Image 1 (cartoon, chains in turn red, yellow):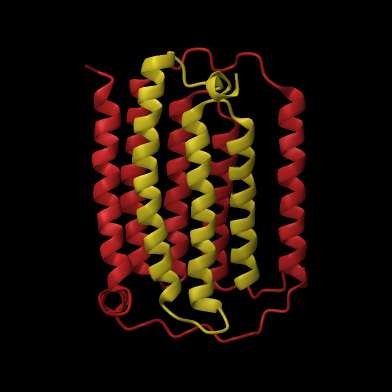
Image 2 (image 1 turned 90 degrees about the vertical axis):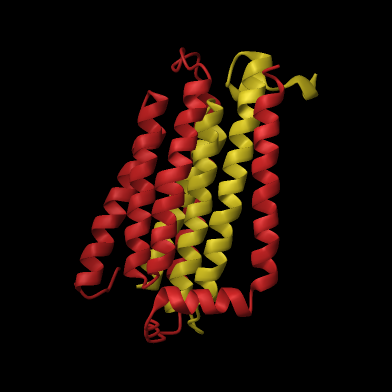
Length: 170
Length: 100
């Protein structure tokens, strides 16, 4: 079914995929919230490794810095500022079963679509000589307006977050 | 290799979807949302290497997505803390005032 050659890339892909799926399943099944965040950090790191495999070094570093670093820490702060005592309170078996069936059937649909699509066998693009420089040139020439808009969005979002979290304390 | 990456992203997306719909802790729902966004990013980067027209645009897109997701996470955690102050819980089942 998976008629791929056993190359270095495939072995590395398999290792990262194992880390990511393991982390994601642990995230779903663990009991304590902090453990869930830690296993999620494993998923983020595995994803960073996969970006390196895809010749996207800059995105990989951004992934590790922002997701494995900032977002995980932010979530841990969120956990520390709220209370989590009763984790395994009354569960909703019917609801969870329905959601599981829905997610599985969605995955089946995706899998069928991916398997039946005839992807043109384009040779992998030769990686840019300097990934970061190429991204920087593209970002500051073709995508300068979205870039500036994003910086405004980030500023507004963080000021709003501070205002939201601070207001109620008074 | 492209179908392998797409399948990987589909697995992550479906696990994230299950977590977002089935979990009751709001922090875990947020984490599951991040997982789904990450799955989309993996697709974007995979197509930027193995797509019909390989280009760096996919990586630029994924950087934009990561930035917006970071802003979303910060605002969401702030809203969660404000909700926790007024309600004393982070159970998503308790946040139903607008339904009543």
